[in-house]
Image 1 (cartoon, helix red, strand yellow):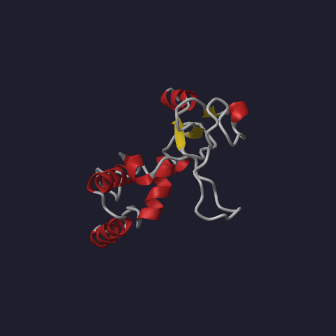
Image 2: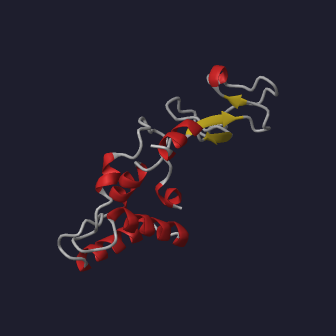
Image 3: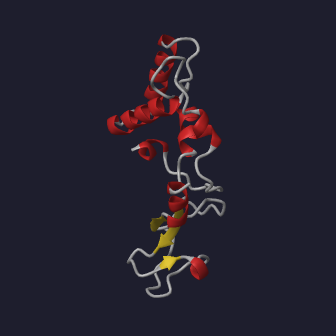
Amino acid sequence: MVFDAAGPNYFVSSHEGVPDDVHAADHPLWDGCTQSQLGVVAELVDIKADGHISERIYDLVSQWANRILPPDHTLLGNYYIMKKLVKDLGLPIEKIDACNNGCMLYWKDDVDLEYYKSCGDGRYKPSQWQDPHQKKSPYVVLRYLPLTPRLQRLYS
């Protein structure tokens, strides 16, 4: 649920367990509180995803909570800061373009091809504008979740 709102991290460079920012966020919200910053953020993100709440509403609720909490609290101030914290929890995801008919993946040796070997269909959707700097949009994107980093995190 957390990644429904914050999104997965496609650019994780290190698979060495949990980042330091996440350990720092595991402290109580304020002295004597039983809830941690990370736990509260996870609950708020879950509520945001389940309730289809906009970023603006999330920011307003965070600002309200910051006003009513004790002055020494560590609750994050807005959605952007929360998203940066949650992003560090993510594991790597690789995006691989695939054929619209399901006959081929653009992976390894075929990553630079423009047309499918087997059926000849194009890899990218036709663009409405002929801007050469515009990023091309593939018909189908497969999201590959590598197993090794997940096992490393599980057993670290």
